[in-house]
Every structure is written in structure tokens, then in C-alpha cells.
Length: 324
Image (tube, rainbow, N blue to C red; front, top):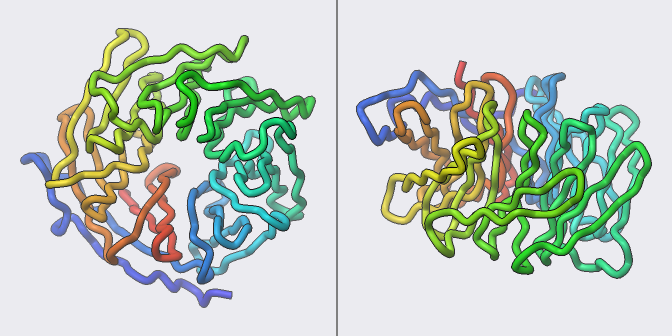
């Protein structure tokens, strides 16, 4: 058990942040919370009750952090588990994409009961990555081996599709308007899934071989993409059918995660700078927020109003930026 309020760092970084333009943001409070050693936390899912769930990839567990006390609850997912992504579903459960089990896993947050939805045996080694629910309650997911799929929790029916251009499907997002998109890291494209048929339309960003890694929708249905291989942030506007790209600050930016908060501010994790980065779409300005410890390796960001959470996979810690 972790003692109460063992936040390893509580740093006001408004002065330390490095704005790339004259537009300076308000104060930002950054805290880190330890999780059990050897967890290798990968993805996070903050929930409405104040808790933060995370995948302990190296331990084969799902963890629940109570930020008020620092206490961590651990739920074993089964022998061979290696969970990657986790999201909170409309049913209140946690839904995990587990590459070790090659299955979608549902975890009841109260009882800790684990239910598996394995992929067909012919789809072994899918390298399951990330999931998102569409507005009908269907779960869509990606696998880096070159697949994407859907699971209907109401019927437990699971389908798997071959992705265009083979390996690569990584981050996935659903828009408020009902569309579903995924980013292909190896394929360097954004894929738009037709929820009715499962067919994919390939959307190529302006920069070739950009390594589209994660994707997140804003409130207007615009898709923001972290371009890992070229150090850029991209945005696709479906209504206009247009792309925009911006290079992150620094000599060698490596944007891994992307997240859009409730105010449509865009956040990224930059491995090149060991920092979190805030992007203001209105002014097209970046603010760099250095992380307190080297080699944090934040692989995913998610949040709730006033908070942006990340998993520091290199340090066995979770990190939060509080903006209000």
C-alpha cells in the first residue's frame, strides 16, 4: 500500500514552462504518483469518481490509483496478461486491450471480476493496442499486427478486419458525431472506419512516412494526431476535408501521446524533450512543460475537466497536470 499523498513532485511550472510564443498560459500544477515497482504503466483512464485506472503492462495487472490517498488497488488479469490500453466504458466497467492474452478484457470496478473476449484463434499475435466506444456502445479496437475490430458488449459478438497497408494500427478515437478513426504507426495514415460496415477509408497526412501514432477527437469532430516520426502535430478536419500540421518545439521532438481536453486544448507527450506539451489551437502556440525526472516515457494521456493524466512507463509513476 502506498502512504497517503505520496506525490513525488508537486511543482508549479508556469514559470518553468517554455512558451513558444508570447502567449503565456496560466499556472499549471504538476504532480507524480508512484505505482508498484515493476508495473511499467502504459495507459491511464481517469474516472468520474476521482480514481485513475492504469494498465500495469509488465505485471499483467490493472491498477486503480486513489490520488487523495495514494493507495493503489491491483487486479490480476490472468496468466500471460500484458495489458496495453484501458478505457472506461458506458457501462461503468474498465475495458482493456491485452496483447498477452490476445483478448479484450472487461473488469468490473467494484468486484474486480474479469471477463475475457478472446480474438479468434486464427488471429493470434494481434498485438492489441487501444480501444474506443462509439456512441452506440460498440467497442472498436486496434492491433499493430495489421488488424482492427469491433466488439458488441450486448451480444458478445467480436469481429476482426484486416487493415489497409498491413501492420500499424495504433491509437483510436470516436467523435461525438459518431465517427471512428484510428492512426496507423507503420502505415503512416489515418483510417476512418464506417461503423455500419467496418470498411476503412485511408486518409494520408500531408507529410509522408510521418508515423501517425495516437489520435483524439475534439468536440467538433476534428481529429488530432501525434506524428511520431517527424515531430509534428496534425489535425484533420472532416468537414473541410483538410489537414494542418505544426512542428513541436525543440531540436528533436518525438510526440507519442495526444489528448484533447474538455476545452479543446490539445496535449502531447514529447519523448525528445521529456516533457508534456500544451497546444492552443486558437493561437497555434505550444507551451512545453518539462517533466521532473529523466526518461519518463509517457505513452498515453487522458483526462477529465481540469486534469490531464499520463502514464510514466519508464519510472513506474503516473503524472497529472492540473490546470484549474
